[in-house]
Image 1 (cartoon, rainbow, N blue to C red):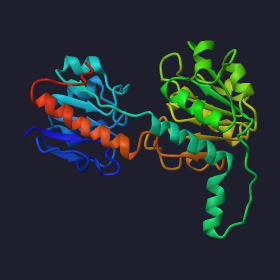
Image 2 (image 1 turned 60 degrees about the vertical axis):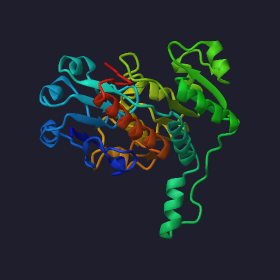
Image 3 (image 1 turned 120 degrees about the horizontal axis):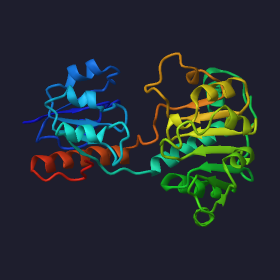
Image 4 (image 1 turned 90 degrees about the vertical axis):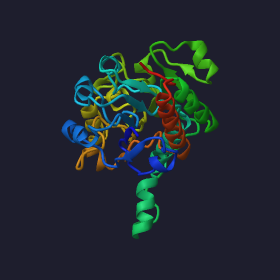
Length: 314
């Protein structure tokens, strides 16, 4: 049997969600922060299953894993895999299906949690603190600003409309007609969206054009009562500028699910700022998605063993 390593299985559930009987599979619950630790653990494996972008696969990684023949990533896109290096090292890369619905749902959990101060209120209730200590922000009649109106952004827009919010959207290629199809207004530009929105939610793909899109200048355009939500990619926002804006109260708060370094280091400011509602990159972590990921990962492995790879990314 070929040996297979399942990486970053934080909940230790991967091997129970599919039939791995055609390979000798083992999973790793802890994240390998260093390359040497990763190579030591999986150097003997011909197959690796990577969970999203938790572990980068660069040219150096492929060079140090000469036994590797098949790399399966959950989802059909993974910016942390150097596909050209995989090809140069004779490694087949395959993907799996995925649902965008869980990220939509978590986006709204963060928005609602911030607006109604659920974390401090629930904590006070459990610990004998004050009975009612905050005044929640209304969503009905307020403006929801969406950066990106694709698969996820358009669904977030639909929920915003259900709450009675005025939905505006912007991205570089977004048209007035596409925005209208999703029940949103096209903002004249990014600055106008930031200045007018009570909630700003990011749903853009990370690229050279979107990296650092929101810096100190852009954050200063937001209302001091506004919330920023990021379930997309941390690097779209200048993290130091965001921390400063939150620390100084220049925006009301942020709901964050993505970070420059994951797991988020102990002692990081985003773990302790009182106006941050932070979750450990849970956007895609649901029963439906995990079932799809690992069931189709095994399908990819079986197809590879049969000499006919499916969902091939290289």
